[in-house]
Length: 461
Image (cartoon, rainbow, N blue to C red; front, side, top):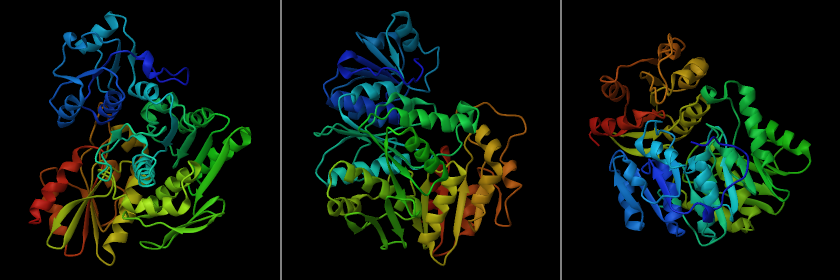
């Protein structure tokens, strides 16, 4: 598979017939969906018959279940998902035939090469902010194309080809692949050390974001959060280069677009054109900041501020971003993808704002041994803001175990309301802790999301 680089971007026309290995993944299916809508001949395969594959087949893609070299057919370009192993028969056949094998981000970059591109990057908040921008622009009548790493109820899908020349895309920094895009507007929500299994050092993370902003053209703009130290430092370094316009948003006095967040119903932004109320269905300061970023992008694209502010009311959230799963006995159960200490703290703050005078209980699953090793104390400090914090074993994802790295590294820093919990005890433990009016939150990037419905069921919901 080709390594993400900051060099030349292909165009859609140069790809020819495209075959996706692992087409059922959320990111892969997004790119495939847009290509089909734009007239590209697409085939694809996956190990399992996933629901999205039926949607793609109905749209005109050739779909196969199971991997076989024959599935490549007459493909001229191959796109391989990040989870595809080197011994995959289709990947081996593509290499043997000398076909170009692209990273998903390279395929997406080729698809949007002629559009006016808005990318959203950052350690946290990418999916929500990208979703907000797409919903806002749809509400303002711009009908953008979009590709998002989560399903969005207000949009119906996580990717679509719109009728305008605006393309909004989530830009993932986890493997450096965001350097394959060529945005005109780049949003950076925050910059913190993460994905150190890939980058190695915090400094390498910061350097990667510098390279990302260097991709902006002479008429481009960086929209960055003034409330985040990492994003603000990035903005200052970008300004110092002298060739990129920078817009800061946030509650900070340094912000060009100033956010005033007094809680639900009391969120507005101040601009040179006046002050505009933002009607938000989603709680939390982090979501108010994401909304301010979306508002700033809309203004850059020529949307009237009154229209932009009103259109945000249509955003009801993204999948696994403080998503209500149900409830019972007066207890509401939410699920969140939070897998970094800052994200966990933000999700719990949102839960606290919803709970009011009642309690907040979290079931947390650490994601990756390396991340747990790097941030164990920070995870515990975030979890200690809950009344009850139950911690599951680490979800390994792509990693092999690291000697001495277990969830105990987090548990040893938990206060009285926190402890380790076995998988078969977790549902009962969290249900026993919760009372009427309380909020239960399942958090993590692994299979902890499956516990939400089980908790709802145990509550009689």
